[in-house]
Image (cartoon, rainbow, N blue to C red; front, side, top):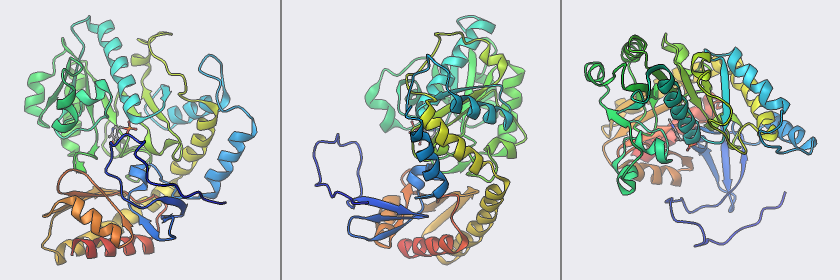
Length: 393
Ligand SMILES: Cc1ncc(COP(=O)(O)O)c(C=O)c1O
């Protein structure tokens, strides 16, 4: 395959501070730039590329999906791949129904609308408030940015969507503000990703489940970053001893093609009627065919077991780095989702790691996030953590 080198352009809206190299090729857990330099990938395109790069199964699924000649027909007509994937997701989770969309923020927007419609049905118009938590990130669209706890993402766009409130991750405070009359849903990431890879306490999440159930309030789990195998089970909630009413997923669903989904119970689904929500592209046959392949791979107990093995290795390696480096304040994570708090700005470490040929992403001012592909082996993981240690210095 020939690659065309492009000149740096001003035509793209400047929303990102992009690294300067141009990435042109990927293989396994490595990416290559236009000069042929290799980078070990500890970001997975921000938790998307669970199966790494140039995966033979993904390639086959892409070719098969193209073979039919039908990339898209809209949701006016039935197509097989989306129906098959919905059946698989229902079979593997608490859910009875699935709604497909195109991104994480869209999945959360959909979940908010479903919660509002359900709330109106069971408690009237007053039961419409959505509670989100300190440190949360649920997306950048209008409803989701109101549920995202980052002043720089929110403040320039005020007034934000109404009826969405952020509260402390504290059960006593939440017991004061969550009411049967006014609250329709609480949304929470079991591991807050963008907010600093904060692993929420199991007891806290169980308490929140109890509180929401007691007050007839829906619990929405946002597993867009921490779900789909990343913590060593298909869904993170499986390790928490709770089940939500709605669950949102996206990032790795279709191996880098845009896809998101809301999984929900029948009790919530009954509130939604034809016309209440919709999308042109969501769950289209091309994307869904590839997503069926990804589902089969990430739900395979062998891959999930591998993630658990890599978790143990990551834990051990990072503990060693932390012992040796006074520049590390804390290390935490699950599966292949880890945060390392450093004393200096995280972006400085990310920059030096790039020079070492290691791709990292920050999560707030002082946290580095490690999100390698789930297929990474012990050798590459050890090599990456070594480069991280050198980048921290
Ligand atoms: C937990 C969580 N929710 C929602 C989103 C938004 O997803 P998207 O960027 O696909 O809209 C993200 C993206 O980083 C996320 O990590």
